Image (cartoon, rainbow, N blue to C red; front, side, top):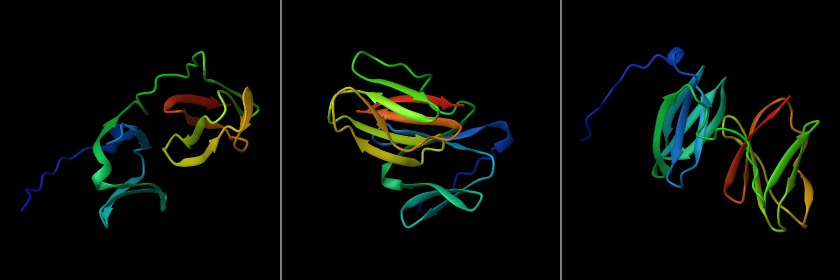
Length: 146
């Protein structure tokens, strides 16, 4: 039998619940209005009656409350990957075959794409105002769309 450990945490004290999976991926979920349940071996996070994350408990490495959304500090491109946003349109400059994933700040995957050619390519649909996490071949970028 496992001992039950309970700790009172005031959600008003923290802005985010940060969940880290065994592959090192971090998801920051807005703490306000967040409900967490465990069902069929999964952690299920809901907000405003909509599921924002479902994570297999076997893949869950850790979770903690924080006032910082993720460990990604800012968008920084390197020599091989460059990303830009103009009028909500995401463009990626990277080699052919590069995998690009777009997620909202809650960690919900919005799209997954593979670049078809060399050079700069428009990826995904027009992004609305907000903060997005862009993963290009396992390197993550945080962008803000005004």
